[in-house]
Image (tube, rainbow, N blue to C red; front, side, top):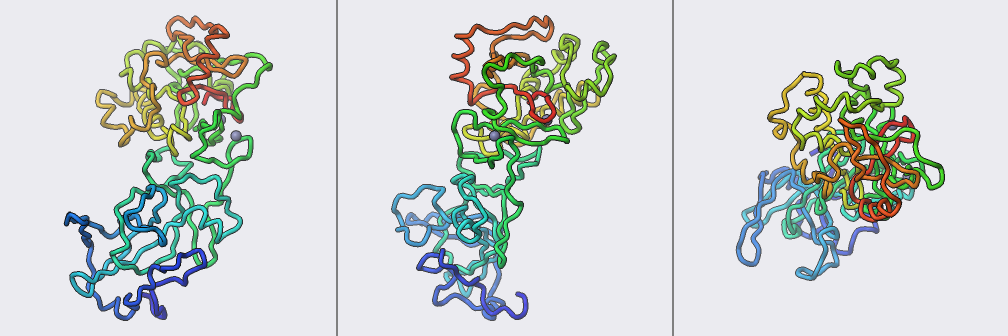
Length: 406
Ligand SMILES: [Zn+2]
Ligand SMILES: [Zn+2]
């Protein structure tokens, strides 16, 4: 306990409810707190006498003030906080020092520069706002994940996970990092946006490393077909960390090109040359590596970035003969398959079927064969049918900055 502080509780703002947590009449003051016995865990029993443990560093749900115990409440409506310290006067008189997570709306009320509307329902802001509360306020444990939008190893964030990507710090209520748009439209990422085109694709190349809305970078109608088709094989033959195209001994035509040109385009000119070494790899790994890196809406807040990046690294190492991939699944991140979109492993999108056509629709069934190189466009009617069903699945699009496949 730092000297000079006389109370645990940070002074409540008007946003705080009437029954002010941390202001219970018999809450310990700092002097008493320092003399109380610390514990790592406390237990709360429910009406059936089943005990639930709460430990230091757990994130917990707290019933918001004004809500009745037992009344219906959605998970995202709970307040959330992290347990910092547990102390007790006796077996039943237990007090807990907590650190609050702010809702986006609370943060926006405190700091008017913050735009709450781009935050999801389960999004919170980590704060250094502490309180001392009794154990009676705790409802249950919550899953709280940190979301670093620039992290290629970001763990997936699932539907019932709370998450935070910003912090709000007392006393100046500064928010960091400053929310910044990465797409050409200048709009911030709203993970809860399920509108068509809101899915975001990542260009992982170090000079880009930005997400773009699918709808903002899909080629617009009437501009004609791309001069460069986008192949999923590009995903496999580019080092995901450096953005440098792999140079395989088998690919004599690609190796003969000036390196600069190959890097800029990041397209493999003759995918057929790579078919044999890729075909020798575990095909589920190949399919995972050949997915675009996407996030948003039904694809999850953080999307499939960690899974796809891990798969691409494994493929890259294997193609360079640096590593065997027999036990590749053991080297994939936790829950990686759960972070992949429905249908990712289906035959129809296996590896080499990606082409952006003149109306911005990827013909995901065109079956561009790696070995045959026989590219063709689908019929107009077929493309429209695919467009209606693939917004939540995979497309390959051009990065607006580097022109590579994303
Ligand atoms: Zn955009
Ligand atoms: Zn790029």
